[in-house]
Image (cartoon, rainbow, N blue to C red; front, side):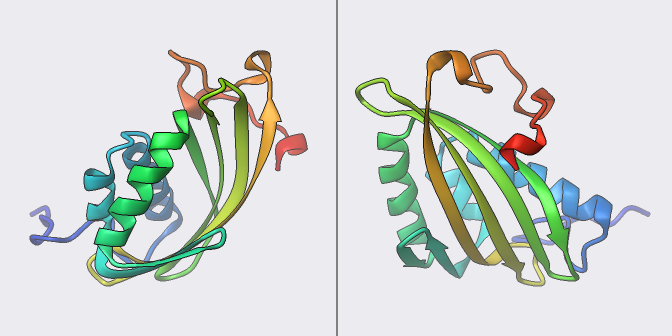
Length: 158
C-alpha cells in the first residue's frame, strides 16, 4: 500500500537518497518559478531562517515580504536549480536565474544554496550566495518557451 503525505508534510522527506534529493531540488525550482510568494512559503517551516546574500530573515511572513519585493524588481524571473550535494537532511544546489530591471537590462544570477530540512520535508534553513552578471538579450538562456531544464550549462558557467 502506498503511503500518503500527512497534512503539512512536503515529500520527499529526509533522509534523502540521490533520487529524492533530485526530486526535492526540481520541486523547489518549479515552485520558485511560479513567482508566487504565498505558494513558495509553503515549502518552509513557520520558523524557517534564511540568509539571502546580505539579508537575514526568519519565518514565513518575512519570506513572503522578501519575495514580494524581490519579484517586483526582478522582472521576467526564470530559475534553474541543480543538485550539488546532499546528506540525510541537507541539500546543496547550484542555480542560475535570469531577470531584467525596469530599464530592461538583463542579468544572470549565479549562486549556491544550502538547505536544511525538518522531518516533515519543509525547509528549516536556507542560505544563498549569489552574483549578478549583466547579459544581453542575445545571451539569455531562459527565453519564453524554453524549458529551463533543457538548457546546456557548460563548465564556463559553473
